[in-house]
Amino acid sequence: MADAGDYHVDMLLDLRTLVEVQGPKEAVQRADSVPLFTGDVLLKWRQLEAFGYSIVSIPHWVWECLDSLEAQMEFLKGLGLLPTGARASPVRLPGPPPDESEE
Image (cartoon, rainbow, N blue to C red; front, side, top):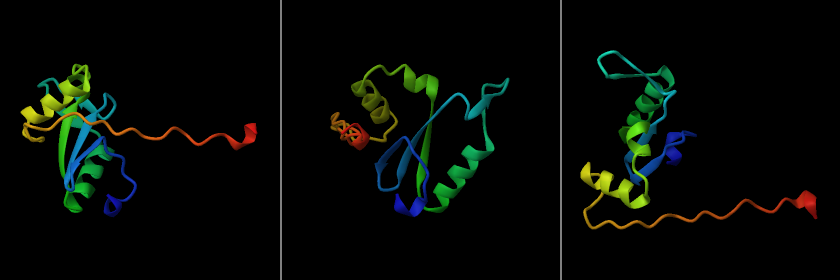
């Protein structure tokens, strides 16, 4: 995503599909249950779309109900975002570098 600047995204499913889990402060709920996203969220989406990305938005209350990686993957498969044969393979990131001041 080097072409998209310094934006943080929750998931990059393939080279051009992003998943954003929308937190409670990124939208307000209207009386008709349609979320009204904040200006910074809408600007981010417009810019990412201009770079050629497709954005899938998932409300935080939906994502938080999915209590395991497998449940999250099944949800994404149900949306057609992952192939049915996809299996969970979480990425293990290295820990923080040792604090050199403690030596």
